[in-house]
Length: 145
Image 1 (tube, rainbow, N blue to C red):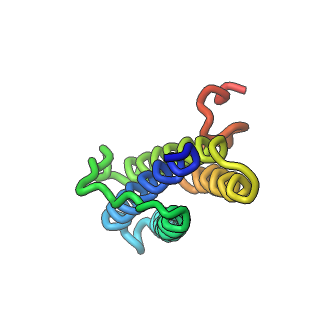
Image 2: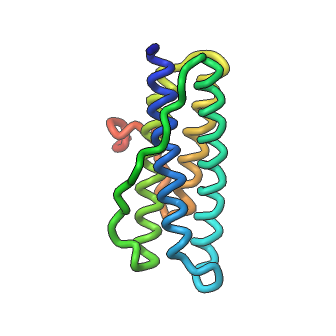
């Protein structure tokens, strides 16, 4: 497996998990009482579902077998409160940003530009979940700059 293919598979695994967690968060969020959070969760779910499907196609185009979703995922803590759901969604987007940053480093050309777009989107989506803008999203070693 090439470094790029490994990074694509790792990103696909993150997308499988994101789709699951967003579905879980959405199922515990009131569309009427928590409208802002519900809309942000729905947008996140749809974005990650689309990315998952795109990655499956990219990996298959490389004549490789896309990794399937895990049989189970651990639910984030604190889902019984609105604040807990905001925090879980923020943590999820930060984890995805780290995965996208690794994908940027493992790709070149058009694929790198696509990975940068994914990273930018994750950074912007963090703001929907009360995140704070960062100079280098997904690169914890540069968080203090």
